[in-house]
Length: 212
Image 1 (cartoon, rainbow, N blue to C red):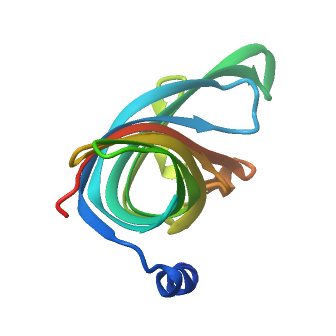
Image 2: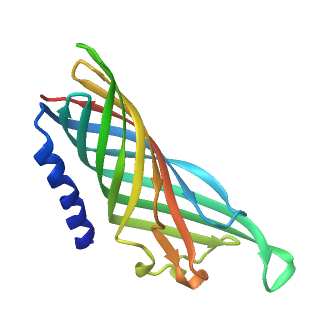
């Protein structure tokens, strides 16, 4: 985790040095919809709602801008599957997996202003984001029986990388963003289930308030 933090810091330093334009700062709140994915095609993916909130800091350089953010996000996901029983091919096994994770997310975004008027602005943006896990809850049910003890603490990664892409609009002091986050690595690998892995992808909408 410390190595990822250092990499994040080194990414920002040259950007701040180059940035000479005006800045803005403020709080940001949002709603997200998460989907767990796996390489096993037999699983049914289900979207689950979550929330997020934190701060953003923008540095403008004519049409370009840099926007690091930091926020706490609550993410929830669910997977269901009915698969054949390896011990009895005639029977089937019903599995349900549910995950709730609270993270500190630090996006490192670079954007471009498509339209920049006095009262309104339209933007596109993207960049990497690192997520640090604060709390995690996981349940595994097989044929209605709780099998959560199969999940070990070390099966979860403490920090993971993802990418974000989105569009935004600024209206006076308000800022609206719609984005999609796609995982670049698995956040959970269950070793007791033949290294069964999960990734999380997220769609979100946020509203910010520019204090200056």
